[in-house]
Image (cartoon, rainbow, N blue to C red; front, side, top):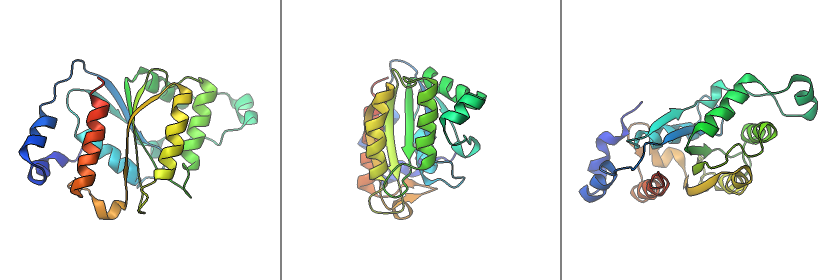
Length: 204
């Protein structure tokens, strides 16, 4: 995992640095982190990995969805083939987690077909597959809207499955505002991201 925190204190005042580095948690939570994209070069997965690099004191399971293909959902396919072991295992990972860190991509202002298909399969397996799960929901894209259309759609959907979205963050113009070495390079966006992360973590 890349060490994004090495230069962070050089970018922010010492007071903020101390606050995040010395935050104490009452309990160690199990957090599941992934992007709603099956692209091997997903920028949303890069945002997820950066976000998890800032977390201390919790157990984190990070999943690369590019390695987890699922067939297009249809009632006929479900009737003939049932539910795959990988889907069942993924659902179990979700239900065993206390919290979820999810960043969704956007295709034509909506969630990707992969993300929608994943939710369709999970909801058929167990309608309340997110029951009791606290969520940090993010998005990013190469455009100035930062995938906000997809984020808003998914934010409205997740409570139907029992999830509780505690905080959201959208990163616009990914190539201009994100570096693999430093993470989020725009000061105001970086602060907004860390505040959203802290709101999420404060519930554990």
